[in-house]
Length: 462
Ligand code: ADP
Ligand code: MG
Image (cartoon, rainbow, N blue to C red; front, side, top):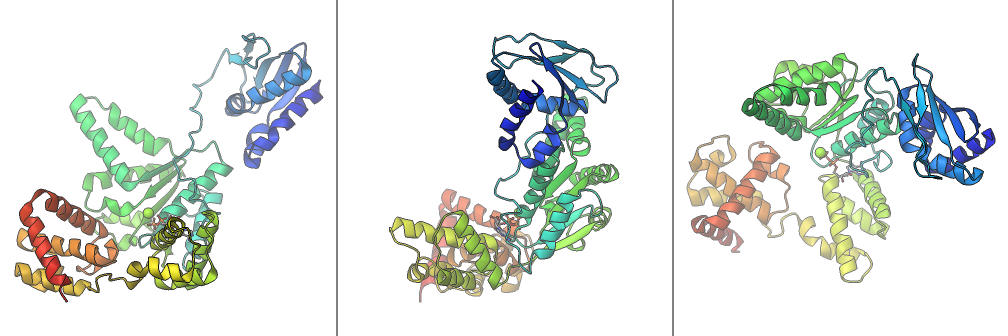
């Protein structure tokens, strides 16, 4: 009879990931079977619950088919001293509804491990390693394999589109694979801040303290691993910083792994308190840099393979040689090319690539440079070029600056961070909000629309 059980277990094994098999399936012992009853033993109630929820129904189904009878299940948990189990008769004949009910539970059962909120394709397997990211990749892997041991926090930094978020998710996937019972909390810093503000406001309105308590439990008590993306978002947000400071301390003190990403080094984060900046340097700091040509080619080929796009070598090299800024742009270029090819019913060729990406690759589709745009805008509004690129915030320069950013985005192929850097090192988010604002104003306000149109037509005149 015991063999029947073993066979039934074996029948479901191929459906289970090896890591889960070792962790959740093997420790369950069958200590007796007969007379329509099965006695199982689990090392603790986590195992018992996980097993009941995930594996027992399929195993029972298989077993009952083999044995041509139904079974009820007794479960013992070795760890706990007094756990009596009682039987609940199978409600539906040959079904597999027979479960145990524990008479006495020392503590309420923990919630089942949630599936982490991660982008499925951001895994280590799908991350192409080259000289400019190999350190960050190795650090991420190390942390994923031995979380909270030595490198805590891990601080990954670098420019946009270079794989920081990808690595962050990859750590989450890997930890989840090896330790499915662990809680992995992934959150963008922006979300953390909104969540915090929301809880505070809710508490003020409703009185009491439960929503803040919930918030704190969520971030301080629940995570075994906290993955927090784009920490630079904390800049100049004092109360959120203070909250994060305490979150960080609580987790670090409890030996929970923290991984942060940022577009700047801790020391260069503006508007972040020293006590927080110094904590960011406690563990390991790893940089991702713009990939070199070979890595860019490798990334393109990898993406092409994943997306089942037939990308000839010469085209891969051509793209990689011309799209240098970051991986996101590289992916975009490939996507655009693949779309064009399938739209025209052609296969991808150098010819088609040249044609499809002419705009992107020329970098200035209109032949305009950002300098000429800045000069023209400054002249139109009669402000100094120096002020247009500088930090002054009053409307007389802030508005022309936004117009110049908007036109730079429209008339060149520069990315937001590049445009920001040409305006005296402004953040990409500043450029994004400027572009959005002018877009909106052009829709709402005929004067703005005509001013922008006039400057644009001046610029386009040969
Ligand atoms: P960041 O967070 O640094 O702005 P992301 O992690 O969002 O950048 O990466 C942008 C895109 O480029 C994503 O689609 C990501 O999968 C891809 N990517 C970045 N680096 C690599 C790499 N080394 N190998 C494969 N894909 C990459
Ligand atoms: Mg990112």
